[in-house]
Image 1 (cartoon, rainbow, N blue to C red):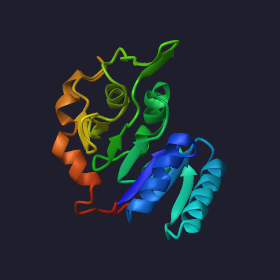
Image 2: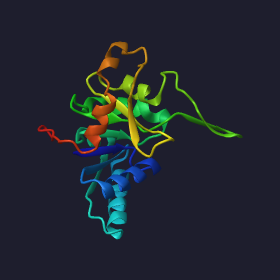
Image 3: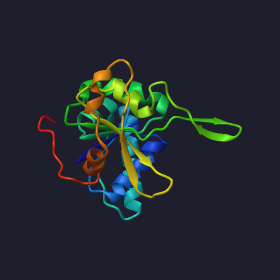
Image 4: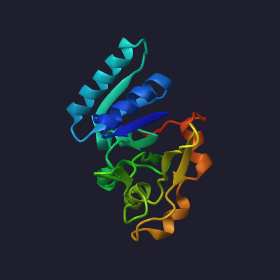
Length: 189
């Protein structure tokens, strides 16, 4: 399976790239708005993994090209960039692709960090609103009482496409896809 990390040259992307590179055999594609920045990040992550004895191949491309080459597109961007990032790559997404948004709306004040619910209901719903109707969107959620990861799909969508909510991934579907179920390659790429 090929996983694209859009915004993969930032902190979130670096952490995910190193983890996926170390713990999986999937192809990792680093995406960025600037292709050279994506290539440099991929080389840096690959060198970091090599220094730790991990043989992994990472490549870097502009976000749209990274999405075009991927089976799973992970939005490694802050919550306020999720919809714009999806919108910018929407033409590169196929109905066999899956979008994952690990972002959570958080706000910080003098008392610390607090959940800041977007108007759409969740950051996943923001991503779903920008995605083509045929592309499922999901979000991993770590539960405090468990070390396992649970999956949530966008339950509500922005008013733009309310009828497509039923097409969003279900809990079991997204988890099994990323956990290593049989993979597929896009024949046109």
